[in-house]
Image 1 (tube, rainbow, N blue to C red):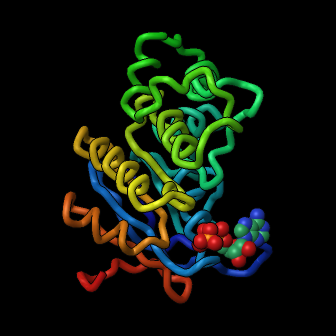
Image 2 (image 1 turned 90 degrees about the vertical axis):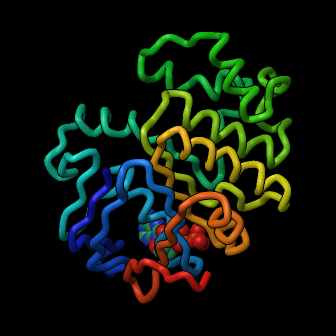
Length: 223
Ligand SMILES: Nc1ncnc2c1ncn2[C@@H]1O[C@H](COP(=O)(O)OP(=O)(O)OP(=O)(O)O)[C@@H](O)[C@H]1O
């Protein structure tokens, strides 16, 4: 589903991630961890086709990223839901409209009942009319997850989705991501939170990728 072969990336000529060879199979659940600045967000952006490897290759859904046309790239991104670190809502639009935005952009119909069901699923049934600045951190994160999955993507990439949340809310968000994985979605979560990883591993068959010394490694069972 996402496959890297000897892929490297760097900013301004400085290598940040090198010689990454890895396959994320369909339906898998992965965490990505590593110190601040190691390149976790950068790795997710590579998987989303927002950045391209400077060497080696990266293919998503069986298509080589470097060979995709603009339309092909847009089509690929429609199959991926991205939960951004800072949620990135449009503050003047109510939450429900923010959540529906990816459908509008894709030219797909917004079915009010489905949108209500999705908001209820993330525990925001009564918050659809609220403006993003009126939401708590946990509500924002769950809203961001709803927006990421509104188009029913095959893959969910989440960048520190529990970054500013208390433990109870982190576990709630994690259980939503686990539920999505059980529905067959491929999930990749970048996080610093080792407790979250341990909790997840008790509930789902998750693998842990670690960025160390600019390399991507599969962590052992020591976490
Ligand atoms: N657009 C950019 N131009 C230049 N350097 C960048 C750019 N984006 C990120 N970097 C640098 O690349 C490195 C990795 O950044 P990245 O955000 O991928 O790390 P991270 O592991 O997600 O960090 P954190 O855990 O703090 O969010 C950092 O040193 C960062 O300053």
